[in-house]
Image (cartoon, rainbow, N blue to C red):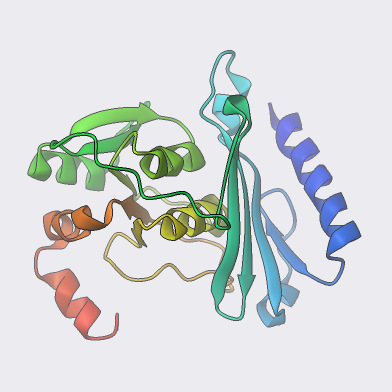
Length: 223
């Protein structure tokens, strides 16, 4: 299954070298380089998100992530779900889907529900939707197949950059699980948590996690 990660990485790197030779790249499958910190343009990519799912016969919930960071922020992103023959991008952005259920639907992993997701599910009386990769989970929210995706078990910038860019362009709430902004192209590629949800559910979700503390944190400029 790891051969899929490497093959996808090599394919994408060849394309960047041909089309954007001066741009920096942060890839799960490539060596990190401090050059990207001073670069004006950085591609943040996960050549194969959901390696385990990709390696299991019949699994469709794996993805490819590509995001472009320029001058402090993401400016373009795309998430591909190859097994579904689907690509989601920031231009044109997917429309905000109608809400399909009065009862919120929260995405959890196949094997273990993150503590934060359990807390929110209990507080908001959510139904559970089980999926594999981060990209597939975030795009399920974008498609309206779920309403909330929370990850608190540790991840890297390439895991969330493209999904967060596409979800935000679609009108979803996107943040850290304390409500603070997601910061990309920071020196440490580690970015431990991630929240994507319908905009009207952001306050209920953050209230369930933090009560009034997240508002005080926000009003203090996330200090």
